[in-house]
Image (tube, rainbow, N blue to C red; front, top):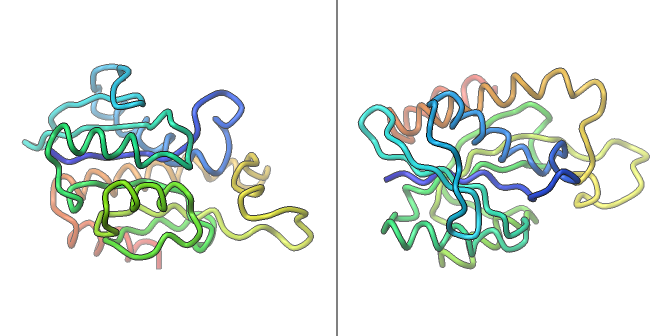
Length: 191
């Protein structure tokens, strides 16, 4: 099984924030697959289905971002999924708004959700689908954490749907063709 995890925070307060892009993407993956409805499992919302002959689990941790790893570990341990078969979909301040990139391993770049996943899995060797939200604009009063917990700027809102579609395409490529192929296609599009 491949485990695809969208990082975000539960509740309406956070639904339309930059930090919840991961939730939006996995919801689109589930919608495209006409998958069974999410059910409460692994301290989150979980569903599983088959895609291109591969069993997929899709998880949205309900533990809040800073404790996402607890939910990820519960699902990975239950299904005996190796870290290289875990795909974490998350917002990324270090990428320009709209960039969609795949990679295996690496640092957490200050992202508390990734820190939690790394801590709980005991390794950084999982796959990341990085969704660029860009840096706070000049004159922004607050931290990067404040920025990602805000809604999208008016000019950005029209592009969110396209970002979600491209990211859902990247998930499909990863599941159907493997990481190398998915990286070649996804990261080339982002250049």
